[in-house]
Length: 375
Image 1: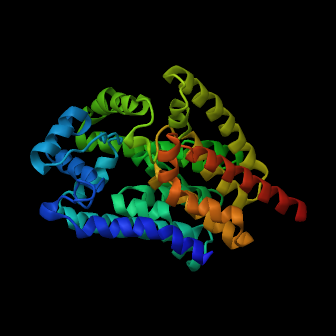
Image 2 (image 1 turned 30 degrees about the vertical axis):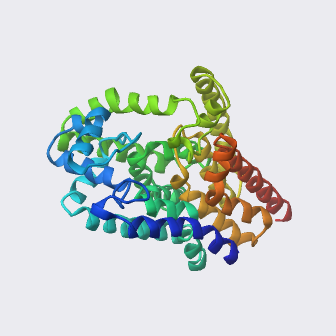
C-alpha cells in the first residue's frame, strides 16, 4: 500500500513544486495564475466583501474584469459561485496578505481533515496516506476547499449517532459548498438520526441569517440571480472543455456522451433519486464503515458539479477500508485513479471518473455484504 501511495503522490507533488518555483512577477509560468491558484479567487471574494462590492463578486463578467485590472491574469471559467455564508469565513482571511492567508488556509484545512479522520477511527498511518493522496495534493496545489468539505462530510456522518449536535453543525457548515452534502439528510434518515438532521437545519438557518445580518440581502439576490445561472452555463457547455478535464460528475459525462441538456438533467434527477433511496437503505442496515463509505461515494455521484480536488473524502474512505481489510488490487486501482484520470480523460475525450466511483461503490457494497455473511 505504501508503494501505491508514494507513486500516486509523485505527479501532483511535482506539479506543486513547479508551480511555486517558477513565478516571475507573482504569476506562475506553468499555470499563468498566482501560485495560490484558486485560493486567489476566495481571497479576492473576501476582499470585495469587505468593500461591500458584491456585484463584482457574483456577476462573473465584473469579477473577471476586476481580476484582470487588479491582478493581471485571466481567471478563465471560474465564477465565484459559492453561497454568501462563505463570505463570513473569507472576509477575515482577506485582512491578511495573500501568501499568509493561503498558508493559514492550507494549515487549517489539513488540521480539520486530520481531526475528522481521527474521529472516524482512522489510525495515524492512514491519515498520513490521505494527506499524500492525489485528491488532497491537488487540493493543496489549487488552494481549494476540498480538505474542509471532506473533513465536514466525514465528521458529520461519523458523529451523527454519538454526537448529533456537533454532526448537525458540521453538516450545516457544508453551506460553503452545498453540493457535497446533498445526501447527508438521506443518510441520517436511514440511520434515524433525527436530532442531527434537526440541528443541521437550525444551524443552516443561523448561518444564512448571519450572512444576511452581516452583508444584507444583496449577496443572496446576486448569488441566486447571477452566479447560479452563470454556473449553469459553465456546466451546460458541451464537453470536452478544459474546465471539464478534472470533472467527476455524472452530468458532465452524460453531456460528453452527447446527451442534450434536458436529457442529462432528466437522467440526473432519475439516478439522483435512486442513489438517494440506496443511501437511505445503506444507512439503515449496513455496518457503520460500509454506510460511511457508500454515502461518501454516492454523494460524489449525485453532485452536479465537482472536480478531482473534491475527492478528499473518497481517499479517506479508501484509507478506512484499507485499515479494515488490508491492501488489494482493487483498492490500489481506486487509490491511483485520481493521479492518472486527467490523462485518461484527455485520451478518451470523456470524463469517466464517475464510472470509476460507481465501480468503487459496487466494490464497497460487496465487501460489506461479505463482512455481513462472516459476522
